[in-house]
Length: 411
Ligand SMILES: *[C@@H]1O[C@H](CO)[C@@H](O)[C@H](O)[C@H]1NC(C)=O
Ligand SMILES: *[C@@H]1O[C@H](CO)[C@@H](O)[C@H](O)[C@H]1NC(C)=O
Ligand SMILES: *[C@@H]1O[C@H](CO)[C@@H](O)[C@H](O)[C@H]1NC(C)=O
Ligand SMILES: *[C@@H]1O[C@H](CO)[C@@H](O)[C@H](O)[C@H]1NC(C)=O
Ligand SMILES: *[C@@H]1O[C@H](CO)[C@@H](O)[C@H](O)[C@H]1NC(C)=O
Ligand SMILES: *[C@@H]1O[C@H](CO)[C@@H](O)[C@H](O)[C@H]1NC(C)=O
Ligand SMILES: *[C@@H]1O[C@H](CO)[C@@H](O)[C@H](O)[C@H]1NC(C)=O
Image (cartoon, rainbow, N blue to C red; front, top):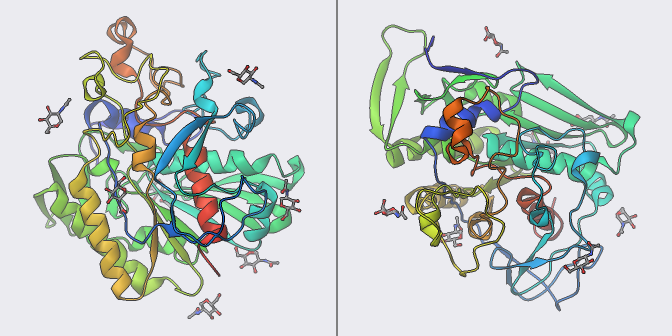
């Protein structure tokens, strides 16, 4: 797969390069999607931020709500106190001055979220593997989760390790024999982007029918949290039948939603066949929105998230990057799986994240390549409007995940 356009990240492997490369060109928006399983939780009387998760009786859509400024409870941790945080999310360390983006609580319309309790979560994860699988947005969420729990663990009782060429990174809480892991599989199925450190930015090829190489790394996990979206955001995707090395392999350009559906079917078939339904909880995180075009929210054309300090206040705002057709594919794949007895919960974070145009790193993050004169003269050109600063929005995704785990998922 010697590909000319390899992006090579330096130093500790991060998944930054993955989207740095694709950032300029691909990407742009996201969408999300997914969905499916009802996202309703049962609840009783509304209760204020109860410290221990409680069950409730009326139905509540966790993902419909509003952001409430709360500088008392937030941020949930301090950037400087989390040594595990990737430099691409550490916005404060990289010069961001306005820090209000760290201080927002998500308030669902019909209920309250339980207060996040790291110790309670670790207890719940005792002797378990809790694992995120996907692209750099999922890595962003993993990073957040590690920061949310690590302060509850003394220094000599936690560790971080890399495996399989850094495709797998494992945070271990020794006392609990629990791991919080992240596995790099940007297209979920096999692709020429699977090397976590070095992957082509602009010439992606996916084997839509092959997932075994990845799946065997995680099929015995207790919790699997997937995402899959960004790397598919091209009009067409090059699919490969056969191996990357074989001269006889067949390559074909396929319309994106069709290719995406093929890949997700491969993924869902794998889950059905290889995952122990009474053991493994499956969660799919919907698309994370991007804020690359200010005109979408009525801003100045040509600008993006750089310099934004306020949220979008229009309820129901939906950016152009969040592709409904991909959401529909996810919904149908998950629904099909449900009829076959496999439940995947959808963490539908798209809408709530759409409002947060002010919460991306923009230029306040580590750059993996020296900036050119042209870039320096025009910072909008290299602003990251795709990932999220930490502490920040992904912490809330994890609070929603936490809510699921305690109120909704029963094992
Ligand atoms: C996620 O929520 C949006 C509305 O915010 C909805 O349109 C979409 O269908 C939902 N997706 C899933 C998979 O539930
Ligand atoms: C929280 O914000 C309020 C209003 O902006 C301010 O008066 C107060 O000092 C802040 N408290 C903290 C702990 O930052
Ligand atoms: C957090 O959870 C632990 C373990 O369940 C419990 O002992 C502790 O009281 C909880 N802390 C708070 C603030 O609720
Ligand atoms: C530790 O957890 C793993 C699963 O992640 C399990 O296989 C193993 O038995 C556990 N070890 C102990 C001593 O309980
Ligand atoms: C690690 O990377 C090297 C070179 O890129 C490759 O030859 C090897 O197969 C990889 N190993 C694994 C376990 O992926
Ligand atoms: C599936 O998981 C359950 C609960 O952990 C366990 O009792 C059962 O033996 C597992 N089944 C298989 C086929 O491994
Ligand atoms: C949003 O996308 C549609 C369809 O691709 C396009 O016509 C429209 O101009 C876009 N709007 C903005 C603000 O980019």
